[in-house]
Image 1 (spheres, rainbow, N blue to C red):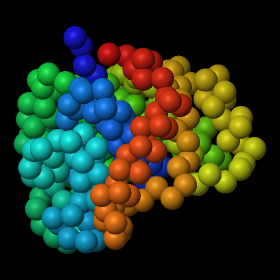
Image 2: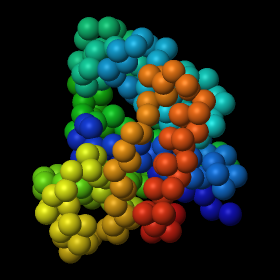
Image 3: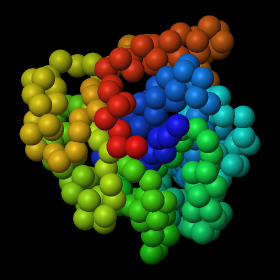
Image 4: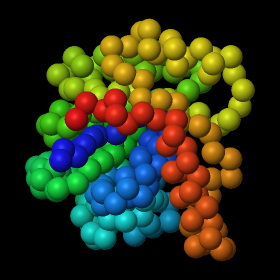
Length: 244
């Protein structure tokens, strides 16, 4: 059996990479596929370096029991691109270490998601950007874009720069980040189909009251509620369109 191994990027920060990635991981877990996950770098860990919220959300969605250092080896408090976070905090990035960890993860007999930080052009070192990590990891790319106004420009730019580097893009997922009605949200999915050379995997719906479990006083019940909502939302995505 062939399992998907994909790299998830966004057209920018705040488009919902982690929410969509968590939903896919919860869904795979519900099928008994035991996915694994990695977020090599996370900045903006305002609650402390032991609480990288995105990496933990992905780890929990995958039920991945590996250590946090294996899942998210580079963590920073500063809400900056990794290159500039290292200027303040140190912990400079060993690029070859990340590539080795991704290579080892690719050999796992199950589905794998690697999540980037920000968009393709985020600098990791003075010489290396996120797009280089994606290319060198030799994984197919899934692009997450906000559904609303600006989607067409941002999505096409991300797709074009990825393809110019020889990266194979499996598809695009549009994410409704705020649930606010907008005429562009009605037209954009078909526009993406018309303008882009890769499949639209689907439109991920806005989920009201999706709870960050770290702020919940009734953690287990609310975590379960969030998990059920994320799995239910997967009906809007056609994962068969992934080129795996």
